[in-house]
Image 1: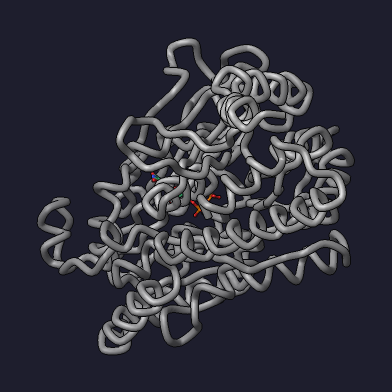
Image 2: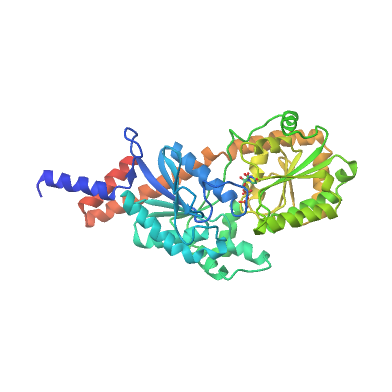
Length: 464
Ligand code: UDP
């Protein structure tokens, strides 16, 4: 084949097969990667039912990875016809909403049937953009299923983060959904077939090995927090800004209204605490809800409990709070509580600690990794009301110790849990996987070289 013709062929292959996209002329070409987060929209309002830690994780990781030089495309399901299909977060990071099933909210336990449509829409998007993502990072088991389908028909590197594990969740819920056995199966398959599973804490890694499979590669990379936003602010200043009383003893909960979050334990513990009788106790229960949905019912149940336990005058429900105002609430609190029955990681704990607020958390899952008992807060058995009441009283009555906890808590997060640090670790993992796959492809091409493989390999290796 003449040189000129070969070059022309190579360049047309490049246009058709290149995984490298540049969104703006003049900006150097970047390696494109896809993050898939089926139900948890990275561009959504956080803090409501089905919008919590996973949304924050995907969005923050995506944005931080883009700052490190990747083109990051984050795929989720469109839940309303009014939503824009593409949300551009920064030059190289965007959310892409795919149509799979009706364009309305569908609870995640009912989403599996729409995942084939999701995969088809993803593939159509790739064809339309003329790109093939060489690395896909899936989040939650539904996305894992999509990743496994894509892996079967494309040469991709597949990375997965669970966010929640059926094997841990189901034994503790009253009503096991019909989809449970499918979920457990996919959760095992993804561990065994993905190129790497990211556990967000050593505790999660242990669970994966004990409850899911002995096979498959796992790396521990934690979740993070935005340490520029969540940092120490003076308690007095924060309370003035929020109109909260300087002498109150403030116990703060932040999160979704879900029975498994253990809000009931915290309310009962506050009612049983010595702080209640002192008259200065203030309970702040923050989080969004929709009266039509399950989180609305749980909020109503908690509000009734607050009435019954004679805490209504001492409790406020500020509703859903944005990350712009949340640092003030954390800073204003004397203690932040995370009473979850189970928590794979628990972003709220590190957000509060970053703001210098001691944390009392259940001694479960990722909370055992983030909260250092006696140094950044306390760990207490979930649902043990007396132990929770004692822990709350201990922190509220020992100002000197609480001040020490504040300093340690914030230092621990800055050192270990910034999104930038997390993204650097993920980026390093992606590079290793892509380089490995390129090397494998090179070895393969020694046996069976094609011009497109050769050009693809060189291109991606250059971009790494
Ligand atoms: N959140 C928020 N506003 C609220 C309540 C919660 O922004 O009113 C955020 C919170 O700051 C955290 C996330 O929702 O970033 C909850 O994550 P976590 O891992 O603690 O719990 P999950 O919702 O994943 O179970």
